[in-house]
Image (tube, rainbow over all chains, first blue to last red; front, side, top):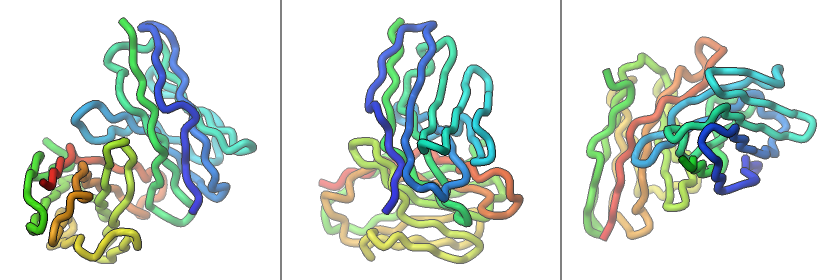
Length: 112
Length: 116
């Protein structure tokens, strides 16, 4: 079936720099996308979401960009902090469904 | 004030045993889920349960059976445990399709199952 994937499995950034985590999706019918953060030993935690009728949404230090033309989703974290170190997942929801399909995850390591 | 809770957090058992994992949510959500996360961190949906309707992922062995005594609880029972069942199991909940706007799922802390 169609799936959500990530370009980079690991990402190391210097503290204070901006981070960009990318995600490619293949289901053109998906209408809702979410980014989750999973810290070691914990469950995934919601960060930010975006509907398919938008191309950008901003939160606190985070921005999600959606490019439906190339089916690409990205998460930007401004001024990355050590507490941002975690595995980040993108997830998509197919139109008419309430179930999410998760991507493979990207591990973000912040270098102090 | 835990939103989604699971017990136990760790479960170590031998092959062939039967075990259960419990999940409770106090968010008033209509829909609950079970996910399996493997050693590579891949999250895979196993079941979703929306207003008494159970949706089963076809790739899940029938040794796994979800049981929902009420809307706030969705337990996972596993029969005849196998080595390959070792993973972290996450329960989650969401508003489902009601309300329209938000479909975010809230996850529990996970249960690490080790089968020896």
